[in-house]
Image (cartoon, rainbow, N blue to C red):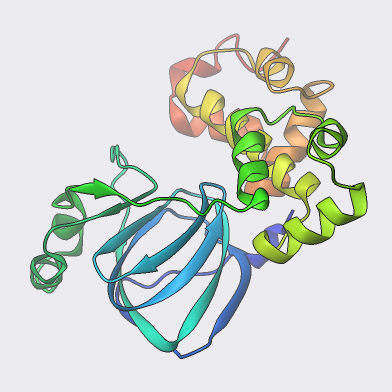
Length: 237
């Protein structure tokens, strides 16, 4: 996993990505949306690996990590804030990106809220992408079993996945598990000890260390931030 000090800031508005630019795997503290206006690039993150082009929209949830490889022609994106109540797919296509640009010139939040998917975007289908999907669907999955089932040595599995996603399978799994725990912390009233057990952590301190690694703050902080009434009886076992 990345160190919590490695957060990057996403500035709202147009952003030019230079030809053949490679942006190493990084994480943003706040969620945001990127609308691809021109050019193309590849992005690999928790949702999978996608070949992005004009008209595509990528939704980055808070604390998600990803890397980018820009093509030889470069790309331009429009970064927008992620509304707190947004229910959007991770990657999709919009009908008229230019209309979103015009709206963003007046109000970036209104532009974000106006985004409407017209179709999905297919995820890449290499074995590394199959492994990424398997991990996100079941963050407690045993990597050794997956490697054996698909005929990979542990070294080949780790090296190939890291080349595609910028992180080892074990690191990717740790982040997927921490994100799963964050959703339960923010959206449920489960006691934190129960969240730890549900997500495969050995105990509540283990959960807290993982959440601090992901976000820079402990699990109790996020439970209090999500809804103050949840804290009564939910922070202790």
